[in-house]
Amino acid sequence: MASIENKINHNLSLAIRNSAFGFASLACRLVGSSLIFIVIARLPGIGVIEFGQITYAIALSGLFIIFSEFGFNPLIIREIAAEPKRLKLYARSVLSLRLILSFIGFLLFFAFLKYVNIENQGHLICVVIGIAFYLGSFSGYLQAILQSQEKMHLELLCIVVENVSMVIIILFTFFFKPNAIKIAFVFLITKTISLIINYIVCGRFVLWVYPIFNTQIWRKLFLEALPFALAGVITTGIVQIDTVLLRELSMDNPELNVGLYQAAMRLFLVPMLLPQIVLKVFLPQLSRMHGNKGTGLLRNLCQVNNILFTLGLLIGLVTYFRGNDLVYFFYGEKLADAGPLLKVLGITIMMRFGAAYNLYFTIRNRIWFRVWTGIVGLFAVILFNFLLIPKFGVMGVAYASVASHIVYWLPWLIAIYKYEKTIWLGWRILPALISFIILISFLYATSHFSLFYMLPVYSLVVCLLTFFTIPSVERSKIISQYTIRGACSNVK
Image (cartoon, rainbow, N blue to C red; front, side, top):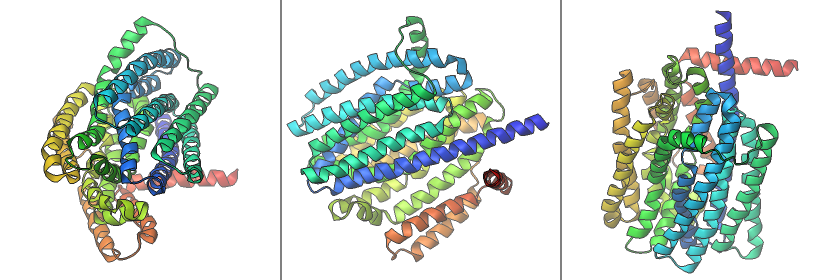
């Protein structure tokens, strides 16, 4: 019994440690990403149209990069965490496959640019940013290797270097009459620096990665990664294709519409890093603890899901209630028209916080279910955008996002009920609703206060309300873990 208790405490301690580093990475990504796009939007040579060109290039490159990634990142995290001796063979074989697929993917990306009607400056921006983000995707692969070893502190180091260098170089462009093309090259320089740092860190502390050619293992990896790849393509398509469709379907000022939508989307994506951190922290650990048949998986996922859904509900409420103020606070008058877009997108935040459901289907090896539901979701995104953009313009994209998220979630809830006889996966609805009422009252009472002062207060209130929706036994365990760590630190 003592050994079982020690194992539970070790796993809890490891989860807390990895969560701490994961959330430190989150803070770095949040601050870095926010600063990057806020600074870009406020540069004197960057108008809404130029902002739209830059963000369109990022969205478009993301659609093609997912082909070269081919779902290998979650596969190697799951497989190496479950069986560490696979590290060398899997990591190096995947690199060789990534190089081949990246070459093919970039050719397809370049061919698409020749097909669409885009001016010379926009074309150059897309090419430069496309190369930059292809390099960045390899940094993500190296970070996946670090995650498979649960070395979140090393991943944090790499993220800090990338974001700090990006902010510094962009600020430096103030002295050189910044324009959209120069900003594209800033992305290229920064992603190159980041790749070099990630490669050195991965090699020094885990494994020097180089391509090896083994057609037998390639075939195995390709087949195992196929459902992850399809799920990734579909998920990325759901997130990115609306930007491409907005540009092609807008009757007037397509690049201006893209700029407004992406301004709202960039703020909307900041809290989306939370479920990404949860996936990073818990995919390797839960794979190691439970495999694809462990009986304790559901209990752990219910604990995670309760926190995530409550956070999503409360963050979405703040986003909806003060969406106009958020846009004006971060971007100023230039992009103020993006406020209504952010408010509507805020409705979907809770649905975007379904990382526990994602973990359930991944660890239980039901990836093909994710693929088929993703196809449904992608079809819904395309259909609703075709119907709503011509009618409502840029607001049609936001309405389409809400509608397609509802369609996407229905099969997930049905499947969870079929397998586990519940659709909520541990979410404590009554405490969450009480927190919702408290927060909306607080938002109403403080609606006339400046967001400069209230944003940190809202963040603290959301965290406290979420913490107190956790069952008291789990709260006590979390507090005791940090108390023990603090006491040990003082002794040292």
